[in-house]
Amino acid sequence: MTRPPLRPAAQQGSATLAAALLAVVAAFQAALALGAPWGEAAYGGAHRGALPAKYRASSAVASTAYGVLTLVTLGRGPGTTARRRILSAASALMMLGTAMNLASRSRLERALWTPVAGTLAVTLLRVARSTPTGGTRPTAGPRGGRPRRA
Image 1 (spheres, rainbow, N blue to C red):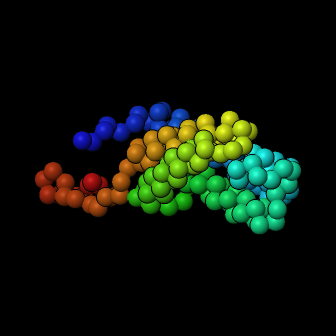
Image 2 (cartoon, rainbow, N blue to C red):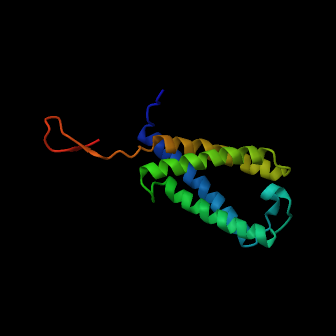
Image 3 (cartoon, helix red, strand yellow):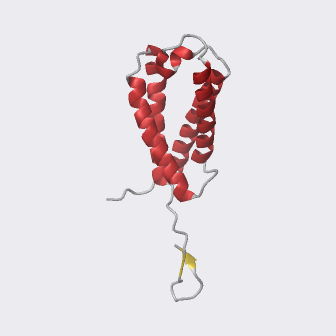
Protein backbone atom coordinates (compact mmCIF):
# COMPACT_ATOMS: atom_id res chain seq x y z
CA MET A 1 0.00 0.00 0.00
CA THR A 2 1.47 3.34 -1.00
CA ARG A 3 0.94 6.47 0.99
CA PRO A 4 0.15 9.77 -0.68
CA PRO A 5 3.11 12.14 -0.74
CA LEU A 6 3.29 14.88 1.85
CA ARG A 7 2.03 18.28 0.83
CA PRO A 8 4.92 20.67 0.12
CA ALA A 9 4.26 22.71 3.29
CA ALA A 10 4.34 19.57 5.47
CA GLN A 11 7.52 18.37 3.77
CA GLN A 12 9.17 21.75 4.20
CA GLY A 13 8.13 21.91 7.87
CA SER A 14 9.59 18.47 8.56
CA ALA A 15 12.79 19.30 6.70
CA THR A 16 13.16 22.61 8.55
CA LEU A 17 12.59 21.02 11.97
CA ALA A 18 14.97 18.14 11.22
CA ALA A 19 17.66 20.50 9.90
CA ALA A 20 17.36 22.74 12.96
CA LEU A 21 17.66 19.79 15.35
CA LEU A 22 20.58 18.34 13.38
CA ALA A 23 22.34 21.70 13.53
CA VAL A 24 21.86 21.78 17.32
CA VAL A 25 23.28 18.26 17.65
CA ALA A 26 26.21 19.17 15.35
CA ALA A 27 26.95 22.24 17.47
CA PHE A 28 26.72 20.21 20.69
CA GLN A 29 29.13 17.60 19.31
CA ALA A 30 31.50 20.32 18.09
CA ALA A 31 31.46 21.90 21.56
CA LEU A 32 32.25 18.52 23.13
CA ALA A 33 35.12 18.06 20.66
CA LEU A 34 36.49 21.45 21.66
CA GLY A 35 36.41 20.55 25.34
CA ALA A 36 33.06 21.83 26.62
CA PRO A 37 32.35 20.37 30.09
CA TRP A 38 29.17 18.57 29.03
CA GLY A 39 30.34 14.97 29.32
CA GLU A 40 27.39 14.02 31.53
CA ALA A 41 25.02 14.72 28.64
CA ALA A 42 26.78 12.41 26.17
CA TYR A 43 28.18 8.91 25.78
CA GLY A 44 26.09 7.45 28.59
CA GLY A 45 27.04 10.22 31.00
CA ALA A 46 30.17 8.34 32.07
CA HIS A 47 32.43 11.39 31.97
CA ARG A 48 31.95 14.47 34.11
CA GLY A 49 33.33 17.65 32.64
CA ALA A 50 35.27 17.54 29.39
CA LEU A 51 35.50 14.28 27.50
CA PRO A 52 38.70 12.24 27.17
CA ALA A 53 40.64 12.67 23.92
CA LYS A 54 39.22 9.63 22.08
CA TYR A 55 35.65 10.74 22.81
CA ARG A 56 36.49 14.27 21.74
CA ALA A 57 37.77 12.89 18.43
CA SER A 58 34.58 10.87 18.07
CA SER A 59 32.54 14.02 18.72
CA ALA A 60 34.50 15.87 16.03
CA VAL A 61 33.63 13.18 13.48
CA ALA A 62 30.00 13.12 14.68
CA SER A 63 29.75 16.90 14.38
CA THR A 64 30.91 16.74 10.78
CA ALA A 65 28.49 13.91 9.98
CA TYR A 66 25.55 15.80 11.51
CA GLY A 67 26.55 18.91 9.56
CA VAL A 68 26.56 16.99 6.28
CA LEU A 69 23.24 15.35 7.16
CA THR A 70 21.79 18.81 7.82
CA LEU A 71 22.69 19.84 4.27
CA VAL A 72 21.26 16.62 2.80
CA THR A 73 18.03 17.18 4.75
CA LEU A 74 17.75 20.65 3.20
CA GLY A 75 18.06 19.15 -0.29
CA ARG A 76 21.68 19.99 -0.96
CA GLY A 77 24.06 17.33 -2.17
CA PRO A 78 23.18 14.01 -3.76
CA GLY A 79 20.38 13.25 -6.19
CA THR A 80 16.92 12.28 -5.06
CA THR A 81 17.44 8.52 -4.84
CA ALA A 82 20.63 8.86 -2.80
CA ARG A 83 18.99 11.54 -0.63
CA ARG A 84 16.03 9.30 0.07
CA ARG A 85 18.30 6.40 1.03
CA ILE A 86 20.55 8.55 3.23
CA LEU A 87 17.59 10.07 5.07
CA SER A 88 15.91 6.67 5.53
CA ALA A 89 19.12 5.22 6.97
CA ALA A 90 19.56 8.26 9.21
CA SER A 91 15.99 7.84 10.44
CA ALA A 92 16.66 4.21 11.31
CA LEU A 93 19.82 5.20 13.19
CA MET A 94 17.86 7.88 15.06
CA MET A 95 15.33 5.24 16.09
CA LEU A 96 18.20 3.20 17.50
CA GLY A 97 19.59 6.34 19.13
CA THR A 98 16.22 7.02 20.75
CA ALA A 99 16.27 3.58 22.35
CA MET A 100 19.89 3.99 23.45
CA ASN A 101 19.25 7.42 24.96
CA LEU A 102 16.17 6.09 26.73
CA ALA A 103 18.30 3.31 28.25
CA SER A 104 21.10 5.66 29.30
CA ARG A 105 22.16 5.80 32.95
CA SER A 106 22.47 9.56 32.61
CA ARG A 107 19.25 11.31 33.59
CA LEU A 108 20.39 14.39 31.69
CA GLU A 109 21.06 12.41 28.52
CA ARG A 110 17.67 10.66 28.76
CA ALA A 111 15.80 13.92 29.30
CA LEU A 112 17.66 15.93 26.68
CA TRP A 113 18.47 13.60 23.81
CA THR A 114 15.65 11.02 23.83
CA PRO A 115 13.06 13.51 22.54
CA VAL A 116 15.55 15.02 20.08
CA ALA A 117 16.47 11.63 18.60
CA GLY A 118 12.82 10.55 18.50
CA THR A 119 11.76 13.73 16.73
CA LEU A 120 14.62 13.34 14.27
CA ALA A 121 13.62 9.72 13.56
CA VAL A 122 10.10 10.83 12.61
CA THR A 123 10.98 14.01 10.71
CA LEU A 124 13.81 12.43 8.73
CA LEU A 125 11.51 9.56 7.72
CA ARG A 126 8.83 12.05 6.65
CA VAL A 127 11.34 13.94 4.52
CA ALA A 128 12.72 10.71 3.05
CA ARG A 129 9.25 9.44 2.16
CA SER A 130 8.31 12.74 0.55
CA THR A 131 11.48 12.87 -1.55
CA PRO A 132 10.62 11.77 -5.08
CA THR A 133 12.41 8.67 -6.31
CA GLY A 134 14.71 8.86 -9.33
CA GLY A 135 13.10 8.02 -12.63
CA THR A 136 13.59 11.15 -14.70
CA ARG A 137 13.94 9.01 -17.81
CA PRO A 138 12.29 10.66 -20.84
CA THR A 139 9.19 8.94 -22.23
CA ALA A 140 7.27 9.54 -25.43
CA GLY A 141 4.69 12.31 -25.47
CA PRO A 142 0.96 11.62 -25.89
CA ARG A 143 1.21 11.44 -29.71
CA GLY A 144 4.69 9.97 -29.90
CA GLY A 145 6.13 13.46 -30.33
CA ARG A 146 8.48 15.33 -28.10
CA PRO A 147 9.56 13.35 -25.03
CA ARG A 148 8.25 14.36 -21.64
CA ARG A 149 9.71 13.67 -18.24
CA ALA A 150 8.35 10.66 -16.34
